Length: 206
Image (cartoon, rainbow, N blue to C red; front, side, top):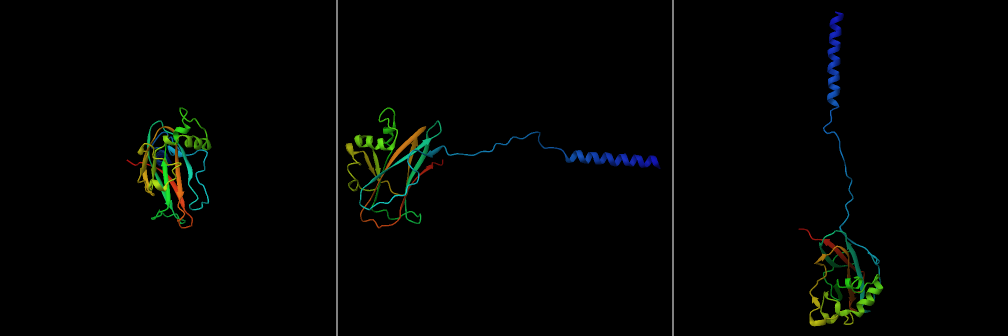
């Protein structure tokens, strides 16, 4: 009787050991995890503020704004620039009469080591004033409504009309830093209030 009991005990212990080993089996030998923080390949940066709060007197003349950024890839990146005019609630204006915007990426010549070789926005504006015939513009309204001391249609083909607000235009960004200049003027008849000009850079989704 004592022998039988011993045999049963060993059998139960063997089953228990098998059960424990089975519970400890792994499905892989090792694992590597990569925690990622994904950043945009194209960014706005530079000496000018990304957000500016200003007070304008309607009809008091134009202002120029620098758009500065960097393509951090070693290849051309297709993007779209959208110029949105928003009301005080952040909604796109459906009536943009009296707001005159112009856009040019030729301010890049001012920063180029081969041409202007400037290092700041103040000197870039000085270079621009001395080289207005280097600039091609895209504008939102008729040329006659723009200050001719800045927006010049040299050669009769340097100004392209038909850039509506709240509409995106395509740009090919070369690797490295990029620059553009935005001209904004407000007609004296514009209804006083709070408005926002938003310059958005968006990827081109294939």
